[in-house]
Image (cartoon, rainbow, N blue to C red):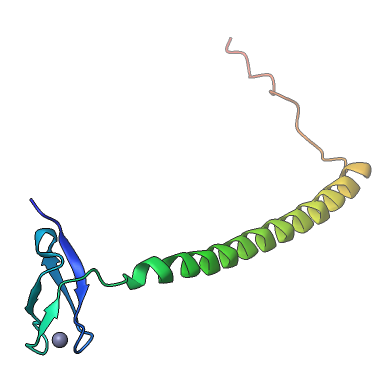
Length: 105
Ligand SMILES: [Zn+2]
């Protein structure tokens, strides 16, 4: 089994795939029909993906950190609020645990 390799036509720049064992040979381009050497094209992904990944990772980290900071601020604010509430305990009239059930005679 040979994995198809991405190639690029030298004449028209069209991209195509070719079997690995045909690398280095000449074949007709499926786009322009001109004979072109079957050479590995510089895969655009190799140079594009890292940069995109870095950019998206940076954005993701920024969003994450921003969200974390916002959450921390909200948490601190909530803590302060609950702390104030705890400082002045509200006397909640709670009914006794269990009212004595009426005893059957
Ligand atoms: Zn071509």
